[in-house]
Image (cartoon, rainbow, N blue to C red):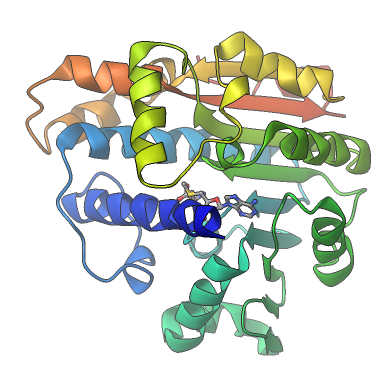
Length: 313
Ligand SMILES: C[S@@+](CC[C@H](N)C(=O)[O-])C[C@H]1O[C@@H](n2cnc3c(N)ncnc32)[C@H](O)[C@@H]1O
């Protein structure tokens, strides 16, 4: 249980870092302050790293959304992610949007949604009935479920029965810095089940990579000291290992980019803009940081010509 507390605490770390980056102007997110009240100052390389992470995930998501007229999104280990509200503001209303996290996190998310009108009013639009429990919420196309992803049959019930996911609709699955906290046997069972169950699916995974070197080992040690084991780190050795894990588990295509590649593929004017926000003394440190994370895009049932639009160039 202690270990789960530390894992859930990684959501607070991520949200606090994102909150500070938003406050500094790296990207816009008017909903995040409803989940994280006060920002804490972070080093510029941390904010740039989060900028690359958020912009990278959104780049691939936007590409995938353009492919499918009608689709559903599952956000695994969503934490306090505000993507649902940001997409609605963009006029993107998917068939269903399901967020999954451990009950300790979803109960806090439920509470925040319940008590903040701007969050709740999106869900209650069109006279949708908003159904709450302590740690779950279902309203219109939005579903928030509290479940341990390592318990696959529970997760299956939450997604297919309680949230009504439809296996024959294109399904985009997001997992942003999550699988590394799950032991490899459990994440493998989950990835295999998704590939087998959903006819057309795109998986967008942000996770650690190159973890066998000195920098990676220090990262592992630091987290261990805080009681947080990276139970899934053994597949985070290099980009090839990240790609192969999906193919081995029944996915048809898989391609991984390290975050240096992602960062430099983002629109030049955006990079120029954010690099002016704060002075960064040690660019080497940022490069090292970016070298230790990657985005992998795996697909199943996506047509060959459609695959060309997915990725970073
Ligand atoms: C580093 S946070 C990332 C949160 C969010 N995706 C983001 O990027 O801001 C990892 C999240 O994964 C969740 N998580 C880890 N293991 C999980 C599991 N076995 N079942 C469900 N959620 C899990 C944690 O509770 C936490 O919210």
